[in-house]
Length: 394
Length: 159
Image (cartoon, rainbow over all chains, first blue to last red; front, side, top):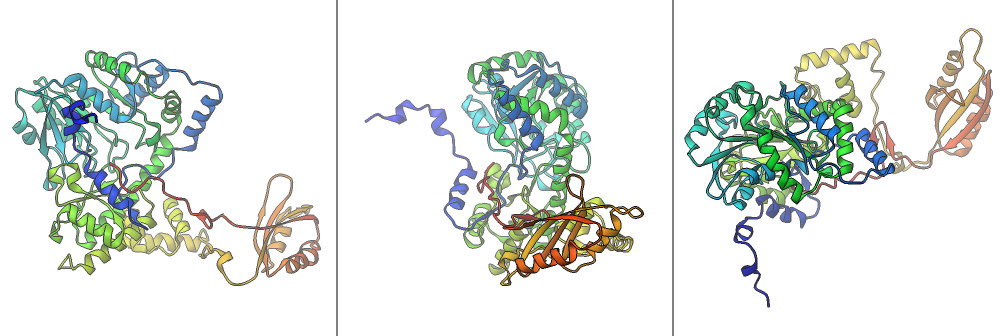
């Protein structure tokens, strides 16, 4: 009998399965569960984009593209950056098309981190940063954001965690799971701290289009920051294209040149059909995005109000499609709350601590669902609180 | 205004408080806007969207394509208004293309409908021909799925 423990790498075996995964298994085995748990749009990819993909398939455009992606797509991405974050990147050597934002995150970390290097990770956050850093032998260093700061990152919090081993700050805004955004004035403060340091900001801006009450601002726009920032974005959330697996990154040529080698050996190039579809998206589909954003925005106002009325205080998020209400008043832990809720009322939400320790006491609720669906789920959550007497003052 | 109408079309029973929340305004404004829409005749009425197949009562719905000769003074209007005046007629639209008026009629059975078409519609002055199509099953009506609810394939939980 082969001893796999001796075969597998320690790093792979040490990697913890996502906290979300465990919860998924519970929900999976119950009948009649309604979910507020998913992190992807409920909209379908706009028809125009699907049609464009079909048409390239009909024409037989099914071969590899350039390693860094179709030039036409990179040109469109360059234009997109200029239009949105007013930053110029050269399509030839400062932009790379990746397999989702996820690959871009992986590439950025792998190209930079050496064993022992410290990576600052702003929590609560998307689940992949820490495991990838650890896989590279790096040391993930958490920076915990706080609800009293609207889950924004502050300059003091960054300063306190910087050492001479710090190589990267991962900046995930608009934030999954909190919905927090960093406005220009918030980012300027962070930029002041980083401006004279050899630290690269990996700015995960995958939710940038889903910013409410104002336009998204990138740290790359701050004085002196473009040369020390890798901007990551993608098509999944903005254009409802999760399954197409297409993202992109932009940054200094000196970094991207080496990132490209990893991408080239690991992936070759991003899916060709998806790339053609993405060209169509950037050229013609901003109206579709606007429509989706205005729909999310209505739901956002509804759901924040609904949670506050239930007595689960909910900070009003300005980005992404999540709310992050506090459940501390119930006396339950996040995990207890979510398990009890799904078992008793069959509503699936995600425990906040799946996104970092400081997410304890909160739950992540996605509003990538129709209003009617949200209403039914919120009704059940209300019944759940009542029946268990979890909130005294309601 | 446009978004307000869209929300009302989806659910006419939505409360003013909820509309105010969704549209980021106050109830008074919503109340005023709806009153204005009603007064100006933009909103003509409110009705329930039903799955009639689940109602225990016999009925048949037909779409009738009418070809008509427009009248010299009033064009299609006079005929269309005459058609619309019947209670049996649920909708009456002037169309581009191979025929002129698209008329929806509901009756208790096929005989009711054929009688209505033969005796009432066909006899209206200017009606040249009728083509009748009976509805077999409705899948979607007024943007609302009636039969065959779409399944959310996204699973329960994902990061």
